[in-house]
Amino acid sequence: MKCGLITPIGPGHAQMFEQSCRPSIEAAWGYHHGPFDALLVYPMDDTEGRHGRSNRRNVAIEQAARDGVDWLFLLDADDILTPNAFEAFGRILAEEPDLDAVWGLICELDAQQEPQLRPDQPERIDSHADFLSHPPAMAVQIGGFYRTKVLAGLGFDESLDTAEDYTLYLQIWRQARCAKRPEIFFLNRRGQHSTGPRSATGQDWRLATDRLWAGAVRETPLWAKVDHGGVAARMRVTNPLDLIQRTHLAGQFFEAEPLSRLHALIPPGARIVDVGANVGNHVIWYAQHLAPAAILPVEPNPAAIRLLDENLAANGVERVIDRRGIGLGVGRAEGRFRAETPDADNLGATSLMADGAGDLRVVTLDALLGDTRIDFLKIDAEGMELDVLAGAARVIARDRPVIWIEIQRANILGFAQRWCRANGYRLADSVPYVHTMDYFAVPEAFVPPRQGRAQASASAGPLPEDIDA
Image (cartoon, rainbow, N blue to C red; front, side, top):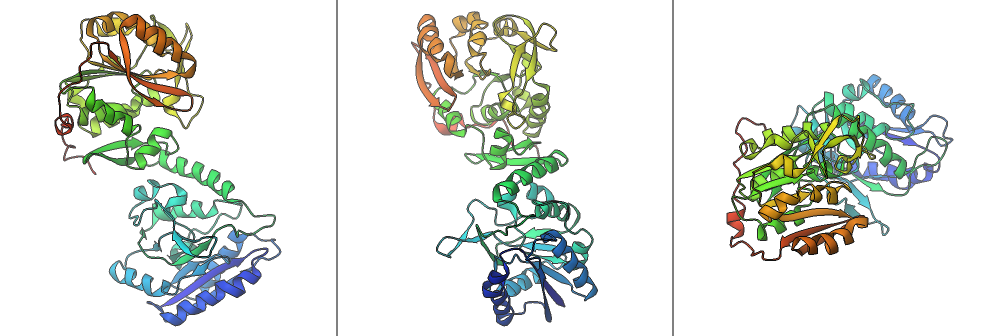
């Protein structure tokens, strides 16, 4: 079996290839051939920057196919092959002979030329969905083993000056049998990228790959596995660049630490109202960790509601959900509004703009709740928080709920000084953010519930068995 190793040599990289890259290839081959009988090296000259690395790689792939090469390794001229690269690949292929492409861990040379594993990267990736669950910079890099017939059928997009590698990864992971394994095939030398008319910076690559990643996720049903205190949740992801959804991909609930503070404030069996439920991050957490009697989400944004409904169903918590507030906004008075999301990557920052002809209906919490009693009220209304309080005056006076409220900086005095004093509330806790402050407010006579963490963490039920993990 033949292995081919392709290295485009761009402007400024000729000396680096000869002094470190080529010797590393020779050393690895001398150490162990792995599953191969022969090695063909394809150093592809582009020192004048006339072709671009994608063209050089494509030309070499075509030549390797004509030469009968079975597997290809793609190595940049500023990188170094590890001594056991072929041997490690051989062990993987012996265990998983059906694979079409194999990557190892991302390992970089630091300023002292010492190898360092990139932190927070996954050790293994086994599927297309798994690949899309990780940011491009944390998934894989160019240095990997590829079946020649697979690579020849795809090739690199020569029109791109950056992210042509990630474009190829997306195609391969979607169409072929791929894997990332806890081996190190090469060492990446940071800050040594080629210069010239077809070059790009690391920032260019990040911006381009983030958009490619987001586009691929929109086309692929993707679920994040989230764990808190040993209780598993599944959260739908349609935009990995969204602040909340990206937190889910990292395996965490958004605002997990502030949520945990609720154990000391909310007893089991509480009735909860969540204004600004968004995609259901807090709602799912309440259901799994506070053992509530009921949760009433309030969310007017159709884009968020679609994900909210999927998350409720996927986590089996619908039995505690009161749906009367889904599709509505709440404020000081009834009216018609329109939703405005200034940042497409922050769905949670959607605000309501007064518009008599808008297609979103806003009511008061007093009208929405009627005689329904509540124990806990969370408000995240993107600047309308004081209006929401004004429209809930009767309910708050009657039920004296614990309140968790996000306050825009301009409204802090209005809430912390005037509203709390006028309504007999005090601030029990706070969480500062750049543009806002979260306050936990309780009635003056509030007595913390007597409950242990284990009791408060009672789940609304395990994940249904018929849902794919």
